[in-house]
Image (cartoon, rainbow, N blue to C red; front, side):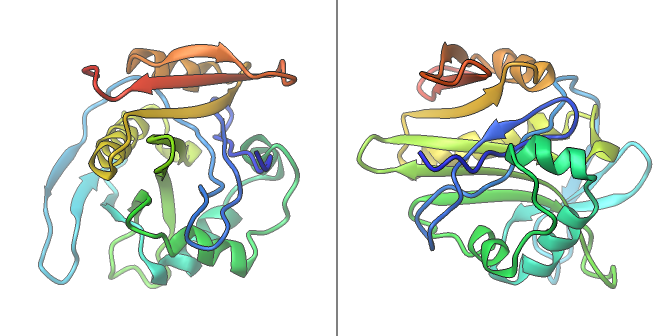
Length: 221
C-alpha cells in the first residue's frame, strides 16, 4: 500500500493511500470524537443541495457529497491546519495540498468512491471544507477503505460519527461487505469511535505503531 496516511487532529488519525486518478482512496485523515452531542439537520433550499447542520457555536454548515468544484474549498480547509496537525494526518510533513492532489480528492469515480463533507454555505465568499469522510471500494475484494477528518473547532459534537456513518452507508450501497482503516495506536479518540461502531482491531504487519480496524457491514452499527 502506498503509505500516504491520513490523520485527524490531535485525537485521531487514519492512514489511507494517495489516490491515483479516479480509482484510489484519497488521502485524508481522521479526527473524530465519539460523543454524540446533538446537532440539528433540516432540508436546505433547492439552490443549495444537501442538509444544513448547526454546530454548537451556532454556525451553519452544509452536509453533502464532495464535488469536482470543491478543490479550492478543500485546499482552504487544509491550509487552516497547523504543521503538527498535517503531520498527524499524513504521517509526513506537507506544506500545502497540491492542486493535482486536491483535484483527485474531489473528482471521485462514483462507482467506487464517495466522500461526505461539511462545508460552508454557498453564500460564504470563500467556502471552506471543515470535515470529510471518505470510502473507496475495491470491487475485487468487496472491501472499502475509509478515512475521516474533522477540524479541531468542530470536535466533540458527534459530527465525525455522523459523517462516518454516512460513509459506511455509502460503502454498503457501492457493494462493499466490509470497511477498514489504519489508525495510529496513540489515536485513542478515533480508536474509541471505531470501537463504538463495532469495528474490530488487528495488527498491521511490520508497522507496530498502527492499528487496523475493520467493520462487517452486514452487522448492525
